[in-house]
Structure formats: structure tokens, C-alpha cells
Image (cartoon, rainbow, N blue to C red; front, side, top):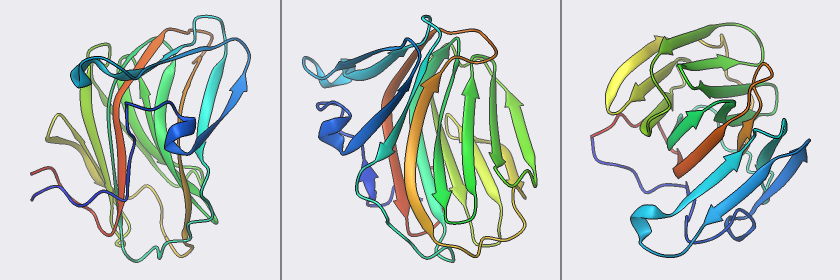
Length: 193
């Protein structure tokens, strides 16, 4: 299936504020947006070795998309210590992709389910998450379905409010987290093409 017209596509030639994201910082964390030079080398680096973290929240909320439509989120990143990921925040829960250096997990804040896949994330990988109105999630890593369909929630009745992403210390361990791409699509679950 071809890629959709992404609802949000983070522009690596701009910093988070230029992409309409506001950072909420905790502890000591260094954020280095590499926004110039060869486009293939542009990235957002989050160094959590100082013991902190940052969550970037989309400024233009509330979005309030219809939950019956379905969603797709995609990230290209590497995690060498700490954890990173993204979240679709609904009015009544959140669906999270949580990435550590050796594991990828998808779960709901409602604790209705959690599914993970062991993978080396210290090297850069493309991860796509699709959420259908069934409701279930599917996670693709480098174009191959690795998780799901997984029932990470029982109902999805409230609208989507926002999209956010983060990098932080995990279980006392920090490291370098590198985002190369970050995007989402509100309009259906789209498998990699």
C-alpha cells in the first residue's frame, strides 16, 4: 500500500518549536537538533545520560479526530540507552509505542494489554504503528509485521486529542536517542508499501 498524505510530518530542517512542538523537560537532558547540511544527516538527538528526559507535545491541540477512522504513526530512530517513543492521546486513554535499546512495546494507559518484540534498537530502524477501529494495533519494524494484530485496548470510543513523542532515562539508564523521521496519519491504518 502506498504511503498516505501524512497528517503531521516532522521537518528535520527545523527544531521542535519550528514543528509546533513544546518540550516539557525533566532533570538534566541535552537536546541537539541537527537541522542543516545534507538532508540525510538531519536528526533530533536527545542525550539522557544526565539523568533526565523530555516530552514534546504538539502545540495545535485539541485535534479531536474521530476514533472510528483509524491511525498510523511512523518513526525512524535508534535508542542507545534510555527509552523513546510516541503516543496517540485520546480523551480517555493513550496508546503508546515504547522503544528501548533491546525492545519495542505497544500498550494502552488503560492497562488492557501490552505486546512487545525483542529487537536491537541501537541501530536505526523504521517503526510503523497502525491502529484500526476494530480495535487493534499492528507494529511493523523495517517493513515487517512484528506485533499484532494486538488488542491493546477493548474500546476506542473517544476522539484523538494530540500526538506527542519523548526521550528519557529508563530504569536509571540514559543514553543517546536519535530521531530521523516522525510522522502520523489520521485517516486509517496504512501498512508499509
